[in-house]
Structures are given as structure tokens and as C-alpha cells.
Amino acid sequence: MNDVEFTSKCKALVLDYANEHLDVTDGKQITVDDVFIVWQVKALQNSKALLSTTLSDGMYYELTYNGDKGEIYLDAYKKFENRCYKI
Image (cartoon, rainbow, N blue to C red; front, side):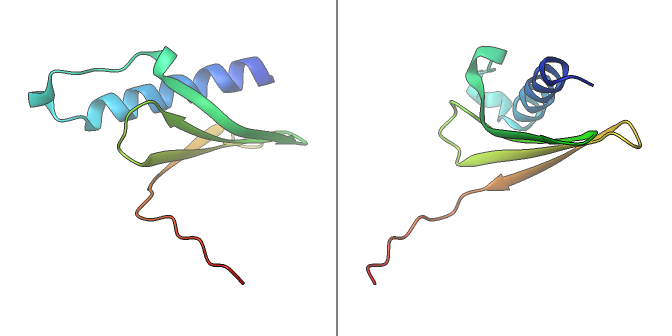
């Protein structure tokens, strides 16, 4: 899987996941234009990307492509807090 295929697939998976988990009573769905890649790397036959959406839900997504098995794993995370400590 090349980089373009990987990023396209990642955006589609995050789009589907986010839309599946939106509250239907909100009557809102996002599009692929609302999904963006924060970071991406390819090592040998494997790839990894961190993605987020324009939703203000604090979610971010880690997608990993296992080139040996031809599988993509999606981990969904929620940001609870961001603290700054002066040292």
C-alpha cells in the first residue's frame, strides 16, 4: 500500500468511525474534508498515522498498517486534559 492509498484509507476509516459515534439527535455528519492527518510515518512495509477531525470532541485516532498481514488497526483516543508544568 503506497502513501496515497494509506492516507486515503485512513481518512475514510476515521470518517466512518466518527460519523458512527455522533449523536443522531444532533443531526450532523462530517465529510472527508473534516478529517486531517496530524503525523504520518512509513517504516519498511508498515505505516502509522495520527488523525483528528474538526469536531470539538477531543478525539484523535491512531491508525497502523501491518504490511505483513495487510491489516489496518484503528485506535480511538479522547483527550481529557492538557496541563503545562513550569520546571
